[in-house]
Length: 265
Ligand SMILES: [Zn+2]
Image (cartoon, rainbow, N blue to C red; front, side, top):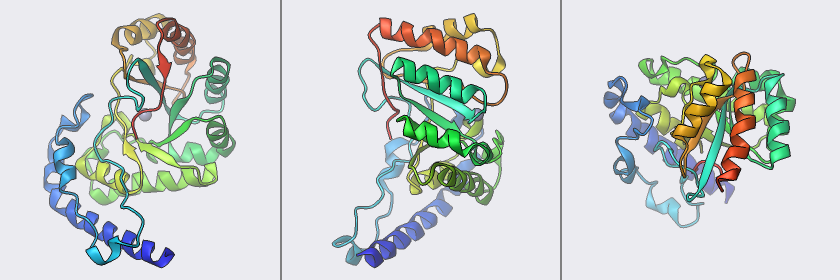
């Protein structure tokens, strides 16, 4: 059975890689992948995803079902929001955010930079142990990676996944988020082929620029709506404003009868 699954997986991988080579030509459209709501080519492209050869299908596990389409909504739908926290883990801010989420009984998704995960494995384990989800946010946080080779993008994604995997002790990494939203069709395909759903966002209050807590909160309130995926940061510098904003936003959302959910995976 294991041999059959392995053979199947290799077959599928080969098929996917072959498919991707053909799609590479469309990777050069600057900007369109960055659109918050983008996801342009959508389910259409996925319907053409090649399947493994028939002889393997009967006995093997079902093919990986992770979609390569960018997620822009919560899995729960309805009046829910997904909190996503990028660029950690950070030795100061990630524990504070985790404490806050625990006090508030809220789950979130943490988009980790590979070397940060490698440096703070205890924080990665804590994220998982407290019921949150992991997201791969690459090795180098190169916001121009959408203009680089497919091989480079693949290394950025898979090396980070390996680092996160090692730090967590093998917990699932549910999502992949490109730094600065620099997704490409190839990077989304690579992530999906490794079980990671490309993760976008719909609410971005620009907290990484440190505009002040009040501005972060006001922008977030304006952008949040049912099913929203909120982008905030727990790493990449002094995140005092982001933390203070989150401290205000969680009770505000609860007061408006929102629940908290993970993004669609
Ligand atoms: Zn980031």
